[in-house]
Image 1 (tube, rainbow, N blue to C red):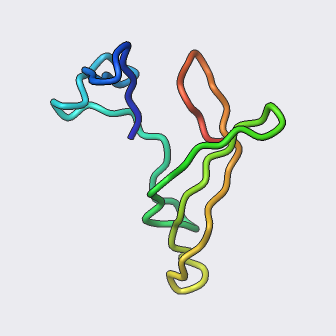
Image 2: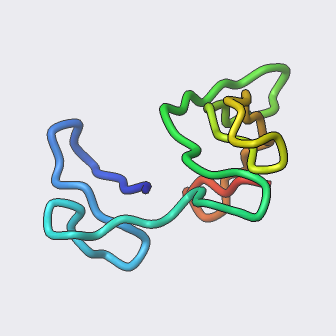
Length: 82
């Protein structure tokens, strides 16, 4: 889930303006046909390109832990996984 704030200490709001402390949050990545449990992420910028890096469980490989790397774009100030 993603939210943002003007101050480091919050409050943090999702894309619809809902306070994350009250259940808000914009989904960035969730379960899919191939992966479940994608989490513990990091975001990196290399050569002017952004990347989302996390672990996930590969359903096609009987739940094997897998490094999950995707391009990340910023649209209207919000992260979007490509």
